[in-house]
Length: 353
Image 1 (spheres, one colour):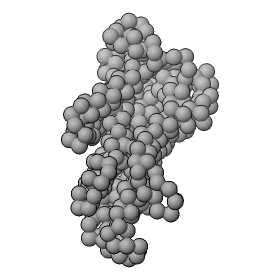
Image 2 (tube, helix red, strand yellow):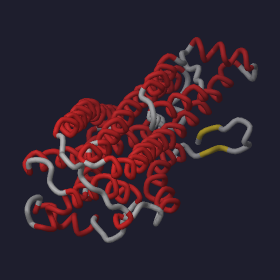
Image 3 (tube, rainbow, N blue to C red):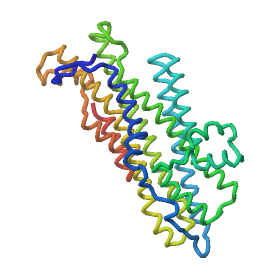
Image 4 (cartoon, rainbow, N blue to C red):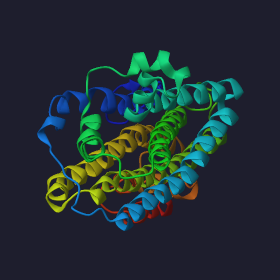
């Protein structure tokens, strides 16, 4: 049980890991579907046209920009995934690490299979036949807000304008997008479980006391900051890649069509950036609250009720947390508009405490 000063009762230790895992899950699967269900743009609402003379230069730059953004994203996501698995395995044992890896990879595979381009290939029998069983489960007639945004900005130009790329290049381009989605959700799932694992003490009971508990709290605080770094970096780069993906189809449309779709593309980038931000916040904040609550209780046990004495003790043991700075850093880490506040916010997180 975690002592909760001022509440008059104790909160079970399992509450914080459960919140760190359930918060992002609720945000993705319930809240955004409930709020945005049925509000997304319909393909029938849009009619786009190619320019009188297609210029390959802007399209080539946009395509390569997206590929570059995905390459950087992959370089961040893979180490973040490995970090989450290895640290969980080191702290909880290899079976736990294997279980988290399998779960995260399955989530990534589901996302990959639900990609519009992959689903079309499975349905047409032109590739990914081994995913047919999964495609029947995840590809339904129900269109989410994310799918409707992608349909409006990406699929409408591809269907109505016709092929402007060499078929092999376009297939390669769309495969990168599908892989980015799968890798992103697999890595995010692993990091969310890492947050939940940090919220759980090494041991529960009198055997975790004194210097051992102080060391445990310090290790968990450092782990929280490191996981925030990985999460903020990965999700910020995901926003950059998403913006590049939505910008690509606009390069082979006429001016009127670009004017029509640009606001949707801008909103789409902001939508995913906001969702990524909420994912990071809902996963990290229960951990920060759990650690801060427990550290406050341990400080009171060591030096008494004096706030000044507790602060001095926490500084001496490198356990002085700044919840507001953590929250501002997390919010900035995946900001949907600018990358610079993300770096600045992460700097505050890493420099605090």
